Length: 312
Image 1 (cartoon, helix red, strand yellow):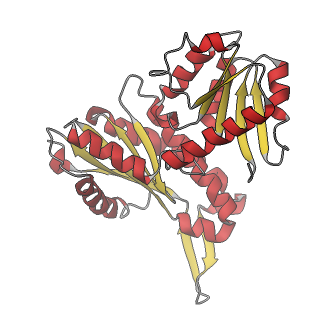
Image 2 (cartoon, one colour; image 1 turned 45 degrees about the vertical axis):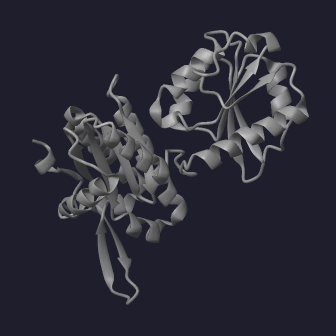
């Protein structure tokens, strides 16, 4: 296990914590540990790990219940989860057909077995799902499958395609590391905004680069777009140096040595509706969204444009 993976552990058992921390050097795997399930949730949703290990015996709720809470959030269903059981008998009480875990360990753990099974759970998830390595959101393949599944079932939905304006100029001046920070912020803004629609069937994905999507019921689309824009616009200026933030723009030179002025980043959203089985293939939605995004980008600030033809 290389490349500085970040794992979360939820347990009140110091022996289990010590055993798992000893499996890898800290440069290979960094562990963040929580003694209670509820204390892990906030951090999990704002900074999702590469893998989550949950002790079935927690002081505030059963480990299986914590897993259900996490997997109940659609955007975190791809997160690999390993459950630690007190003994083999506990396994017989769990319904693995509904409990969305990727593997389990039995205490006291065998270091060699635990290490192998955690590696297996992590790599299985990366093979089966195309989650973005940066944001951990479902990637393009999962997005296509989700859209096509909704179309095939003739469900009504609003599909929003999101693009960042002036992101390249930000990357050119500040570097890819700060660009990645903006992408992470954008992902969290979208996820947290869409999570606010409790009880609604929602989905968030990362197409790649500065392109994202979200799906909400048609009647939630406009308020969802406005929430995303309001949150993004309130945060993004803080990623700029004070001088650029004060003047509301970046001044830089193009390849020919000419000075160019680029505004503070904005967010453009194109919304496609599927009502009454109007769409037959995900490609139709993509084509409509491409045309709508061209309209949205004519606005220098953050905005959303809806496909009025399918909003009848």
